[in-house]
Image: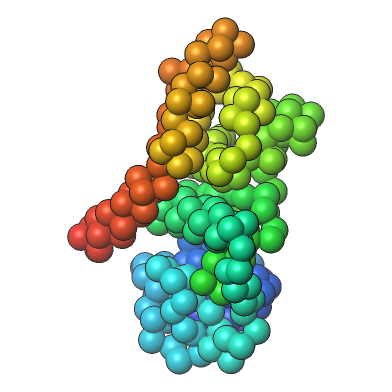
Amino acid sequence: MKKELTFSDAIEQVMMNNWFYAPLSLIYKEFWKYREKTGVTPDKTIQERVQRDKRFTKIGYWVYALTEFLDKLPKEKPIKTEKDKIERMHSRIQWMLIEIWNMNWYDTYTPDKNWIFINKEIWKLATLDKIPQFTYEKIINDSIRFVDVIWFNERWFPAKLIEVENSTDFRAWFIKMNEIQDFRTDFLFIAPEERKNKFDTEKQKIAFKNIKDRCVFQTYDFVENWYNNHIEWKKFKI
């Protein structure tokens, strides 16, 4: 514990160890590694520092970067093909899903190391770099760790498993969700509206009878509206 560091110094260390930027939720979580959270409202002090100290620059909703290293942030590749367009949408939706849960101060996880959106690597916005050992290691390693986005509750159990499906078969993902049917976990599938019938067909198969009532289909537009409404709600709460 380095008590001699200032609040801004400790925030800077969190960002340095997360490749020059971090969501506010991760800063809150990792701050104690570099100094104690002193004062009556230390989290409010952290929030004040990232907003007012010029060494930090806001690069997203509650996401901040080290001003000195803005040129080091990852760059999105230009959209040249239909595949590029699909990948950009996939990364955009994952980014929104991670930020929605981060706004509620819960933990998030994604396995994807390649997606970049608005100069931010998606996986570095998640608050967890590995899945907590909430069940058998084989189930986590063989199935759950490949799910696009996982929301965890305050006890580090999966509250929601989320898949963003552009074109692949829903069946493989239903099988993965089925692995943790004994937990109180909900399952969300995000895909273009035209894939709803395919989702419904897979959902009705007898193999998935134990989880079908917890499996929900939503569209990209739904996630965008959900994200934007959540931002407005958080502003109102503040």
